[in-house]
Image (tube, rainbow, N blue to C red; front, top):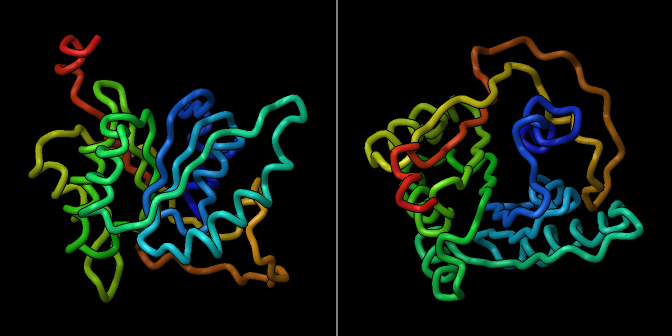
Length: 219
């Protein structure tokens, strides 16, 4: 839940991101909380998950449950849903005229498996709009048992040599309970949390952008 917290009006990235009027894609959306926040901020949002049932049982109900948060004068924002793995969804979106379409791509807890990081990166390359498209990737610094995490993804980005990558935010705080700006279904009673000692792991948000050197070719 770190990326949704970071995107809220009181979050650490609120001054950086302005989703209003933008075309946003959330990859590996699950509950879809980051995408829903962008939707409520006035963006056109497309949600992607590997599992079609996740979209039907979690993402879509969560989107519907939050439409009441829109200003009364606002029209219902545009959103679409896509199922499939990253190795095919980039081509799927491109075939529907959405290649190089998105101003902002959001993804959280999606780089835990190093074997799928290259597929995620290829998908991003197909659908991010140059030259000013922005990607925000939220993840732990390392995922025990599977080997992925921020450092391995940075290496993959640098090896691919298309995007510039930087740290937008980093924290060792447990933020799983911080998001209150979105309704998530099904609701569960809140349980008290004991403070956790730091184990040396961090939650980080990476920012991927196209190099400034390509801008003259597009602007």
